[in-house]
Image (cartoon, rainbow, N blue to C red; front, side):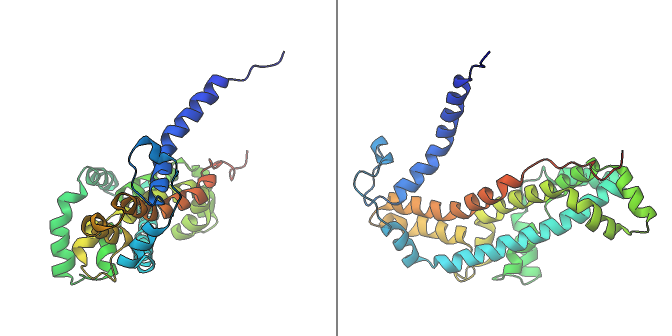
Length: 276
């Protein structure tokens, strides 16, 4: 008997996809329209398209330099977050030491504290005490350790079979060798998750970099676009399109990164290295 296709489910999925993707489509279409059109008809480029909104942004701010600054800032945060997250997560999951439970509880409590409450003491410590104002290191340092990444790595390391670690230690492998050769290859989904979660925060962050540096040559893209939208976009020929063009420039790298990595989010067979 021929099985009937669940057309109703397909329709609902397509409707949900349309509702989710329409704001991004509208943002892109609005950014290439020569004249502002905030009506529903503005979703269709009936009056042609233009790149003048992007040209206007590039004439006011150096998009290439701002993208490079964002890449350095975000890349540094991701690198330090992954390194410290892996080390701390492995220690909390696989090592036995006095006070481990207290350390883990403190890490969970840190996630409750909003970052905005720490802005003033962080500013005093980073800029005044350490003299790291107007520098990449001053922007990166507060984000170097991410408690969420530590928690993600800890949970993944806990899922690994104990027999793998026991066999490696019997063969004489040290903890760093066990971490590098045994644990890390099996937690690739955690690495990708940490990279994506970490990327979104600093890439879109503008408040802390704005406080740390007033030098336009060091400001990330989010800060430059925020200054452009608040101070310049209202005087543009198409303020509506200029704002949407800035949003597209900021969103494009995040969308591209997700498109590249999304196919790697597959479950790993954690028990594949255990015989029997």
